[in-house]
Length: 119
Ligand SMILES: [Zn+2]
Image (cartoon, rainbow, N blue to C red; front, side, top):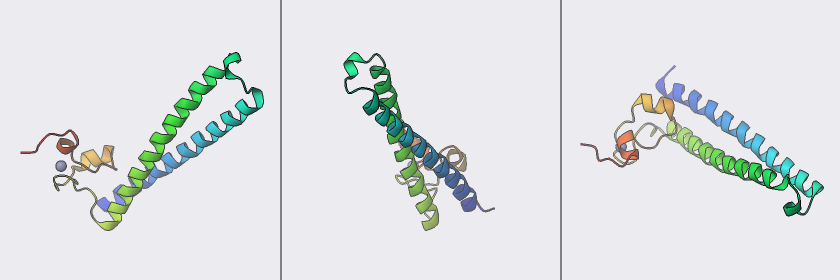
């Protein structure tokens, strides 16, 4: 397996995971929304109301995060196909494979992502 094939498989696996998470979160949010509309229209007098809202807010935040992770992964897959994958978008150097193993969607090398100038 070539390096590109390896990272493509890695990225595809992560994309599948994010898509499953997005689906799960979206359905959980929808269920909560339906449950709330069925149970009560008046949260302030419902002892469960604030808990449900917190869960909903947490799931909504997770959903935003998962969607942005998914779009980063899809962008990484496009770079792989376009042959520009694994190169730092700021300094143009190669991003070490060890970093890409952990963050296959990385656009920047570690020094650039941390805002340090490379010597
Ligand atoms: Zn860099």
